Image (cartoon, rainbow, N blue to C red; front, side, top):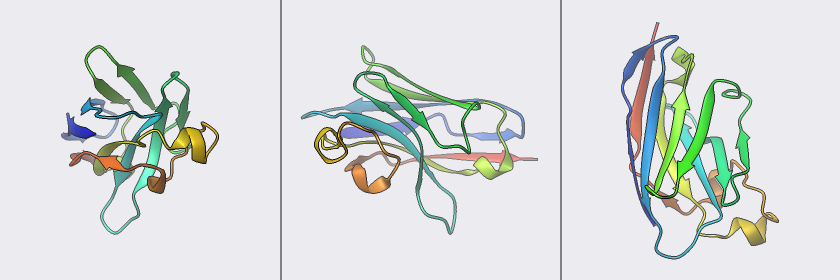
Length: 128
């Protein structure tokens, strides 16, 4: 798969951003997800969506972020509202190549090890 994120920016705390991930799937996928990585920290999964539209969020973004997908445009979105300085990070989208259906029983986990195709990332900076 090929993935390309866009939409990152610098924004004041309390503001909103919408990230986009244009994807091209060559084989298949079951899960797609948004991850982020702050300097000196591990890459963490924040939102996932499976091929049936089931969605899971990390507690840190629940209620503030919304993941969605437009399959006609081959685009995954992440709407981020009420942004906090702690949300500052490089944001990545990823797909699992279909493996989650077999390895996790169809549950899209937020572990980076479940995903094998990644975009280059887009930077989000939130200042107070």
